Every structure is written in C-alpha cells, then in structure tokens.
Length: 243
Ligand code: NAP
Image 1 (tube, rainbow, N blue to C red):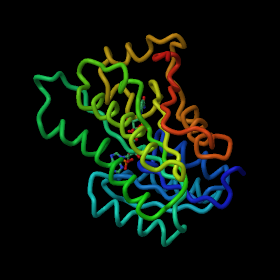
Image 2 (cartoon, rainbow, N blue to C red):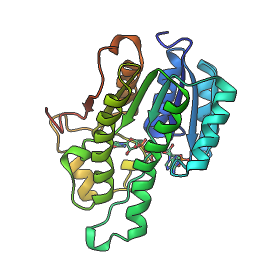
Image 3 (cartoon, rainbow, N blue to C red):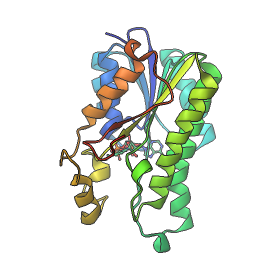
C-alpha cells in the first residue's frame, strides 16, 4: 500500500489505459477521482475502484476550462486535495494531411494537449507538492503518416513534461510515460486502419501491450521509490523506441 493517504486524479479513467491506472493506484491505497467524456462504462470502473479504495467519477470534457475546474472542485470535495495527477485522456483521429479538417486537427490538440494543460494548471494551483504523470506516446517521438495532430500533441506533451518538471521542482515531480501500442478501443480495427495496426506490431516484441503494463509504470512514478526522478519520459513500448 505504497500510496495510502494519497489522492489521485486521473483524466479519462473510464476505460482502456486510464481505467487500469485508476485500479492500480487504488490497489496501492490511493483515493482515486477520475473524469471521462460520456461513456457508461464509467459506472463499472467506479464500482471497481470503490471495491479497492475510495473513488469518485465526473463526466467532463478535459478541453473545457470550466468543466475541468468543476471536476477538480468536486473531486476535492469528495476525496480531498489531490497529490497525484495523471493526464491520460486522449483521442486519435487518423487521416492524411490533405484530408484533415481544421476542426478535427483542433479537436485532437484541444483534448490531448489543452486538456493536459488545464488539468495540470488546476492541480498546481491547489496542490503544492506531489506528482504529475503525463501519458504521451511513442508516436510523439517517432511520428507517423496520417496522424499529424495526434503525433504533434504527444510530442508537445513530452515537452510540457520537461517544462513543468523545471517549473515545479523540487516540490512536484513531473514525468511522462510513452506507451507503444496497447490493446484498447483506440487500437481496435474500428479506430485504426489495417496499415497502422500492422505498423504497431512491427516492434521487437511484436505484440500489443496491456493497459496494466502502462499502469504499473505509472504506479511506480506515483510512489515513494521514484523520488529522484523528474522530467523523464519512459517508453513502455515493446522496443518501438530505444533510447
Ligand atoms: P481509450 O480506450 O480510447 O480511452 C480514452 C479515455 O479518455 C476514455 O476514458 C475517454 O472517456 C477519455 N476521454 C476522451 N476524450 C475525453 C474528453 N474530451 N474529456 C474527458 N475524457 C475524455 O484510449 P486509451 O488507449 O486508453 O488511451 C489513453 C491514453 O493513452 C491517451 O492519451 C492515448 O493517446 C495514450 N496512448 C494510447 C496508446 C494505445 O495504443 N492505446 C498508445 C500510446 C498512447 P469516455 O470513455 O467517456 O469516452
């Protein structure tokens, strides 16, 4: 129970990687408040967290300043001041550059990047110590055709990690986890082209990762054993990026 007495906020916690993160943090004893867009699966996720620790869920759009403020205020009222923030909410839209509408580009940047900015700002305005963990992507380093907004947003997340690590040291440690391809709705055949999925498997480990494999790295970065680590981006990616 490395995180007993801590309160975590996780954006996009209803399913996929965010859900695994919520459960891993709750298993370590943290109280966990998460937000989600509008998925009914949030009810089941909240029940699973509540079986492990105290939980709270809130429907909001992370790209909205007022909705993020409402999420933080309600979570604080329910669970207390947060000590851990995990910026996980994200969306991906695949399309070649010439067919990418401005609105679609803006939406991906708004959720993936502005959302992380808004949640981080809300966190540091109230919490004076703790951890911020961003969920970036190996594609933020590698880039990929047909994913300009997504890759640009994730590259910027890695940069934002370093900015905040400088700005809030030594009180708040700020790191990122950059997953490779993980088996979630985002990598289902409904969301990604067969070409992109084939590229996802072209790594040394030649498989999709599991959400829990990301969650265990997040747990480590949230816990007491990582207190000399800040400004880093950890690849959990089956070898897609080697640094
Ligand atoms: P996912 O299964 O599609 O889940 C996305 C989560 O984000 C859901 O909880 C969703 O809520 C929430 N969300 C989406 N838009 C939101 C918004 N505007 N406001 C609030 N919440 C919102 O995705 P995932 O695969 O778990 O991805 C999680 C993170 O990991 C993302 O940042 C993604 O870019 C990153 N990542 C994923 C992979 C991968 O291969 N899966 C690889 C690298 C990085 P609802 O359920 O309500 O829609």
